[in-house]
Image (cartoon, rainbow over all chains, first blue to last red; front, side, top):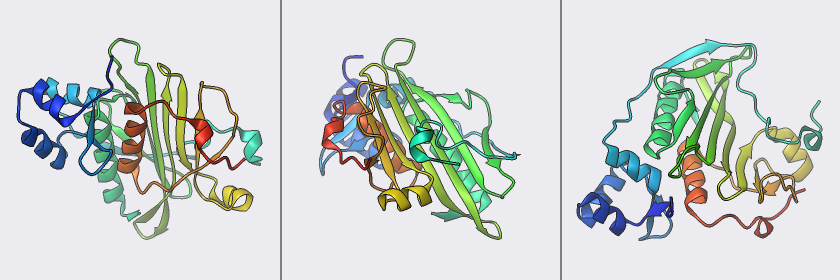
Length: 85
Length: 163
């Protein structure tokens, strides 16, 4: 993948829709985008490809699981640095 | 951020959806599996989402990790206490991470609650912990990770080292 993001203009051309349509998709949260300045957005390529695929993002069910200890935090830390007992 | 159990569950659903909308392919939980809110012996709730960002050809060259914990502060009321947002970009050979954990230790040691990590190349740790800014929720955390991934590789030397 050469480019990791599209501008709104590039995304509009790829989707064959108008600039305004892409802007509306972003505002409605249907197309994830990163606001890099007041008028500039980056649309991550995987996000655009996901949208383009038409595959719906189906909400998943949440299950509650009782455990002695929850998710482990700090696994990527250097434990010795933290001097954790 | 404070929420009831139901609100935490709804939040987890939306966080997973945001990752998938960004094109992240979830490994944990895998496609079709339920999301899990783990409830520990102290009544805290936590979740972990792991995935990969595709970059054109398998295997995916960037890993994404999102962890959060909500501690109980009242009857059916939880407060977000810890988070970890991680990006391991193997294609461009760097790691960025944004953490809030072990807050007492970090406050005592560095007078801060949150910190960041920056490794470029991956595994090169010139500074164990960098100064960071609080991230208000996982939606913002995912935005930060995607901002990093779509941007230029990080300049770790430009960050302020805590030690």
